[in-house]
Image (tube, rainbow, N blue to C red; front, top):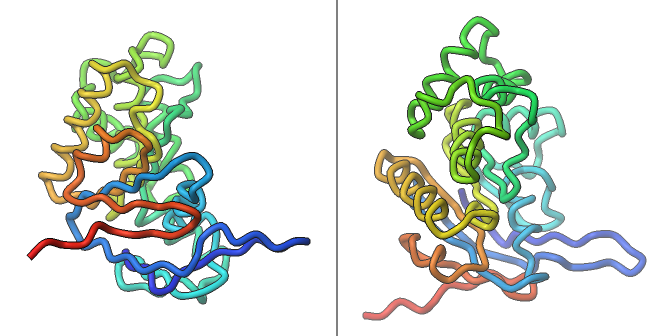
Length: 223
């Protein structure tokens, strides 16, 4: 993913500039973390990077595709094919099994109906939940529920995994388990961007980008 002077201003009155002109390049297979205090622009960054909001300035390239000129339908299709989301609150349907929750992520994609269950189970196996495929979310620990959410994000075989405070609702043991899984996914070649306010989580990335007052910045390189 590449930001070229990307900015976002919400219309007023008065207009609100949530993201100021930013430059950022994330290479294939990188694991970076985005840190910043509450109100710094992390959510706006996520919305733009995840193709949920279109920037009002600059260009955002995803896998070399300039997303600025895409129509809403094309933007939605690209998001479904290329981006997997993991959120702090899991967003699992309580009366659906782990497998069914993962399958639901493929309803609006090009995955044939007949393949969805097999792909969902394979995705759950990948995150270490092959033994919990039929469990309801209420029967799972917080860490297991987040693993289901990660499996759901992976089922579409995205090129980019966007994680918004993925350990925010977990105790230290479950948080460590989820961070270990993200490290495994990164080692397998997945491109991962984690948005967090936790310095310990941020330290797991290959590099950390700070956002404050809508401005992205990286520490100066030494040498």
